[in-house]
Image (cartoon, rainbow, N blue to C red; front, side):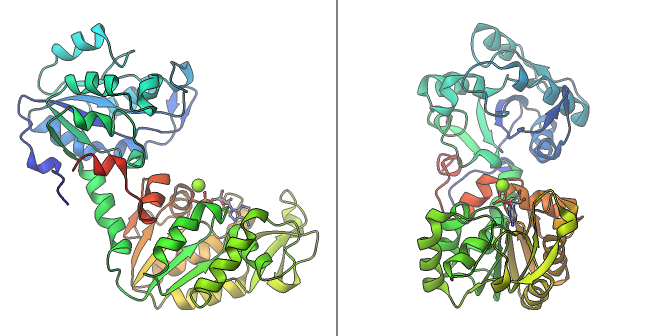
Length: 389
Ligand code: ADP
Ligand code: MG
């Protein structure tokens, strides 16, 4: 694809700018889930072990282009230092004389972490001045921030115009290799399981994937907009009124491939799990809220999944965060695990669900990319990939 890979470089004596996605949850000054830090360790260790020094750049949260104590990277530096068993020099700035000084003093094996790159307004506006300044700190640029590849930001996109030596790290490569298993000639039959909150979040994915898949199994909150489009009563279930016409259109275009649930689990209120019951989708009472697919749907979906050679799971089948509403999601994930298939999970909440039910080591690939994986799977150009070419 015309992109250099981390293994193609000689890092000896070089200063390496590494963009990572350390956008991790932090509570009371501590990282509460370090999966995204761990995902970048392979690239970090490779560069350090082959004689390079590292200037690491990451964003955290959405600090609006100015310093915000809540989003400082100090807890991240502490966690990273523990994981690589090495000091990490965390700077309080992103650019300027003190950064230049710290960088100029670096020796092979040293690690510097710049402050949250989004404290600078030029990051999200892809300011060439910022990109140029960042590029001047290193000899080689490696991007391993898969979760941010859909952003045309200065430390991801702009920087590539100012540095000759650039390439991708192990995480991006692994994500692209695995996600391509569903976008490029997937093994057939190929089934996509779509759920989650809204149809609107998945329209591009549906349109892009529809001519590659054999079936699209629909669950989650989005099923109700489809059911409503078919003329069913859906009570107070999640509805995107303005997507009804689109849902009708999708049903017309892909009707033979779109499989809707036959039953649902409903409640009288999200906070009333004791009212949970199962109804056919044409028998949802006007006051009820659909919170999960039903058991008959689970069986129906399972029978189809078991025959698949490739499965893409994007979007939980119900409000899986609440234990009483998690059965459909768990059951579908179990069916994927039982199928002899390539199993790919994309989307942040879908990955969380797969993890929650213990499928981390079971599926072919659970993307760390969240929104980035969704955009890639929807066939969009990714600025973070394009600019490495
Ligand atoms: P992903 O992050 O994997 O792309 P989404 O963000 O599209 O997934 O959707 C995940 C969210 O959808 C979850 O928080 C889940 O609670 C919610 N959800 C699933 N089913 C329903 C439902 N029936 N009603 C309301 N929300 C739902
Ligand atoms: Mg989500």
